[in-house]
Length: 229
Image 1 (cartoon, rainbow, N blue to C red):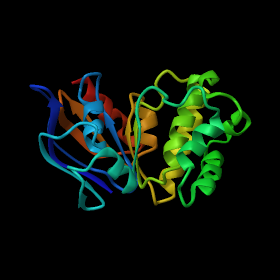
Image 2: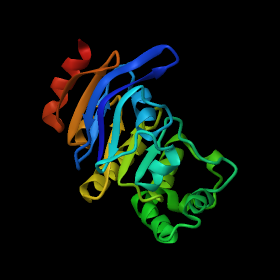
Image 3: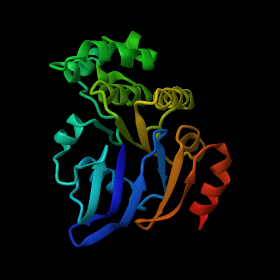
């Protein structure tokens, strides 16, 4: 799975994350903290969009620290950034097929992701730019799942989304992690959602891990207390 070892990363002369150690268990992990804590910066370093200043990024034990993002994708790393990204002028199905094109199991993976997100099925012929925010977020996750990742990184998947769709996304993430062949690293402000869908949590404050532990409903109070400091 994914492991960050003593990772320090930043922009220009500014260091944002300091000596981060994070190990993603099979059941996934939640990375939480207030705005500006460094969560997105750390994710960008994990997927190769931002070079680390020191430390290592390991994927299934392989050092991928110097690999470009597309090489990490080929090795099983998937990333869904903030913003419900898709190709707005293409239909839902065209967005999925564009990613599937040329992949050995591409067509099969499109069918699988539509089983995971059945709300997209009746929207197959609708342009992505006309979908609601929640529908676009489901499409963004589905597009990444077509690449068959072993590690799926999600940055604020419920941001600005209506509650009923949040519940659908939570159910999908929980189902994915239960399969046992996919681990999720989740940045999420909704503490309950994050802890219900992952096995472990990390709290980031000012670019440093200040608290970590086992996930689950019993950890909600501990996480809220850690974030209140």
